[in-house]
Amino acid sequence: MTTNINTMDVNQKMTHFAERNEIWLFGYGSLIYKVDFPILDQQPAEIRGWKRRFWQGSHDHRGTPDAPGRVVTLLAEPDEVCVGMAYLIAPAVLDHLDFREKNGYLRTLVPMCLVNGVETSGLVYIATAENEAFLGEAPLEEMATQIAYSVGPSGRNRDYLFQLADGLRQLGADDSHVFVLESAVRQVLKSGDD
Figure 1 (cartoon, helix red, strand yellow):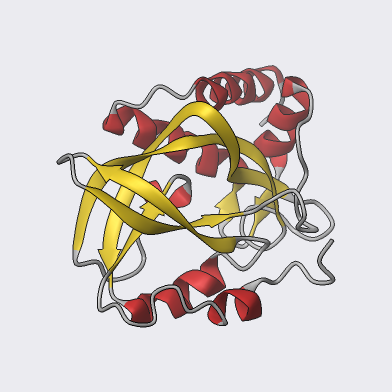
Figure 2 (cartoon, one colour; figure 1 turned 90 degrees about the horizontal axis):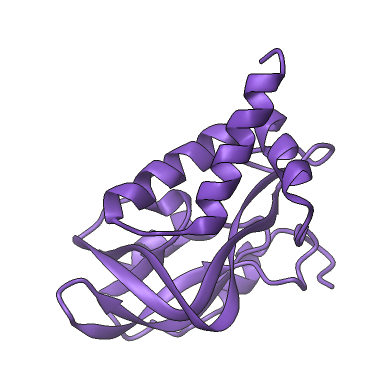
């Protein structure tokens, strides 16, 4: 267990890309639909051996410390393929990304395949089970209710899920975890007052 959810200091000590002028970044969650940093290029991409799950707590964006929301992280799974968006960025952008992803996410190097067939090494932010904000698996209805009603400084947790689902559809990605959860959240909202 870490002693602090904030991972900025750890990430900023990493030197994987110290000699590079450009870095490919793989986005699999809000980075698919919310690009608030300068990019040099972007392409749909995939990484093999990873699956997307709503198992990370969000204490700073889509929830609060007392009532965290749920956002995605990646879990290692040999036969899985995770579809997302790759962005070519300058190293200076990492300071912004480290702040944005500070709630338990660590920079990780992964091989990725761009839609044009080019294979390259890139950066992805992953929140592992060892970070204090990790919530892990829960029953579908419990996760759906938490996402339906959690709100943080960046807005409603449900909007994060809905925008991610729409972004994945635009990429032609089939992610049953996201789509089943989306349907469950809509059902919670339909049966509630909100």
